[in-house]
Image: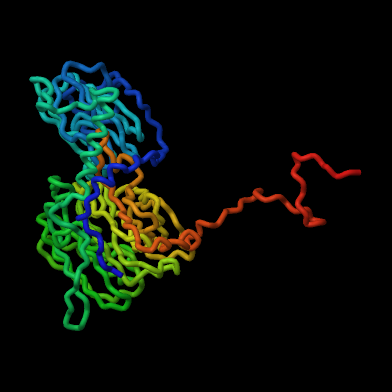
Length: 523
């Protein structure tokens, strides 16, 4: 049942050219108010170059002015990146900032937060930063909301006394296009991105791990934590943190009752670590992996191990609980499953089991199993087949995972089986959560499979990236292979709501006449 069947070797260019564009946006209400219109720098604010008095953090205020002679740069904010992250402008330039994400973000210059920055912008809001008075030089940019810079929302602004850098020869500035020219430019970028799918990259994470067998018959899983160069997408290599050179780390699979040893070797240069078996039910306290509480942190060069018995069926994950804001979001996570979640009767043709780990932060960014489209691997089934998929969220925000036109039945939440499994086409997975679903291959075709927060899958230039892949359903030789599936999934049931049926009279049991119809009884 744990057989991997999914290879990215299937060409999809012709099929993906007809992918329907996503038409709805999942919006997260932040509960706060901010204006899209920029507000002028407050009277009395320090001039450019001054630092806040007494070393206190400066209040972040929006600034605006007419664009100066130094050019204008458009910058988008998403979870969790600044796009583009390198800007070159001349003196008195302007940065036009738009929050293309789903949660509040801002943009400020490090060291000049009071003079050059925006307020917290809700999704879709915009503001300008007028750079008048800023001397030529290089300045760090970041989002000042707690945790966002650490998750990757950083960049660089260069003020060049000679003026903004000239565009490369032949480069098209899509923002300057209008009408059909812009439509064709967007279409070309979209086609160029999807035509690469599925793209090959240097390595794949999440590979099933074969344990060593100890002297007493226990299963030994040795995980070495170290920095690793990881190819997120073709040519996009980042400095990640991984176990055994993989991101996500190897998939640990054991049976209930197995005696297992987890051994961690810390090869990081300058950070301690721990290992927390998140969601592994009934593990001993000394295995919980919280530094200075249940264990001593594992210092660089040290080795830690614990042996325990897997007590109950679990859909868990492992990650550090020490320096996690750096290690975990940059790749130090993996799947850890014990036994098999009970399957409903309708899941009678399960041919494979897989894991999809969601991330949105750090160097890895918006990814599925640490790969960004077009390097995300498609899932391949034949009509009538089924697969078990475990969603994991190791990121910093929720992700509604949407599968087009084929059923996914949620059978467990955080490893707990549901008494009544439920069919959903979109499953919202919050940080730390796990959902186990059975996917039913119902309709032949190449079906888009993605996070439904649009800024997590599409760029402003029309290209596709990030948390986007496909389910390929190949046709079956049996045309009736799914003949009873709608009934078995409960889709043939017509719901009945209060007031939908006419009320029966207490005395006769007969339906009362509609109040709008006249009484036709003869006297």
